[in-house]
Length: 115
Image (tube, rainbow, N blue to C red; front, side, top):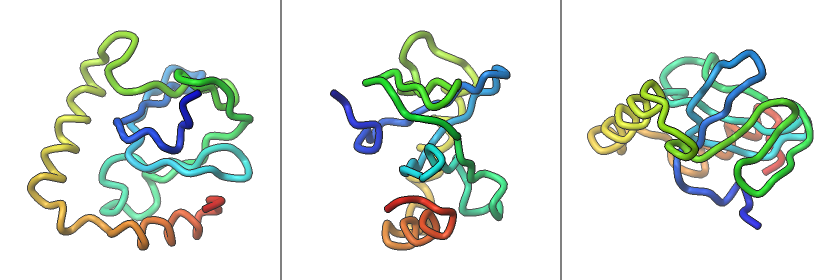
């Protein structure tokens, strides 16, 4: 069984309305899953979300009515692939500006994560 919170590959979430988002940080939350989109640290809190519901599955995973997959699995979404490439390029060029793990965990806790 693959634990969602130990996956290091980029993940995507598809919501029931068809919206897809890239998840670059993910944490357990009492209401479901807390996740951060790329560039969350530059954009106030608009790129930090809680997907509500019970978590189930071994990959793909379901959280409520949303589905979480590894980016690139089960067909490649061109928009998600471009976001992954842009995010990886950003980290290569400006990774020293990205918050450290302790800061990320503190921010996640501030948003209610169970970490």
